Image 1 (spheres, helix red, strand yellow):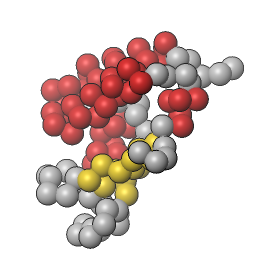
Image 2 (cartoon, helix red, strand yellow):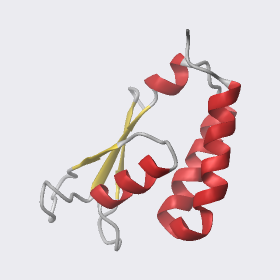
Image 3 (cartoon, rainbow, N blue to C red):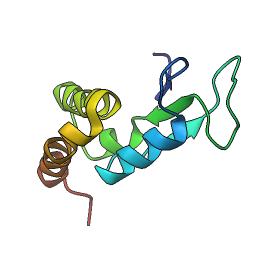
Image 4 (cartoon, helix red, strand yellow):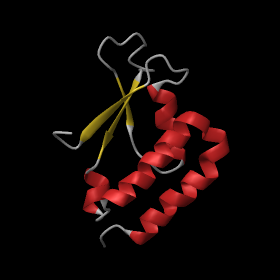
Length: 102
């Protein structure tokens, strides 16, 4: 990517940006719903989700840590109920490994 922002396009999926935002929030990954080109859903629901990397790079996370985060996001999209606890544990472990500055 040319910058720190990414957009996940959920068009055609039975999942809205608003729902994914809420699911990710429950496993402590912050993102926000966003419209996509050709948006068909309401701007209050959306077909997209915007992600950025500044928060994780500020904490010192490395590319391999991004792989873990990406896996948690993918699992949340595919099987939220079946993966929620495992994803939450992975996110918590990363946060413990890379604490916020004091």
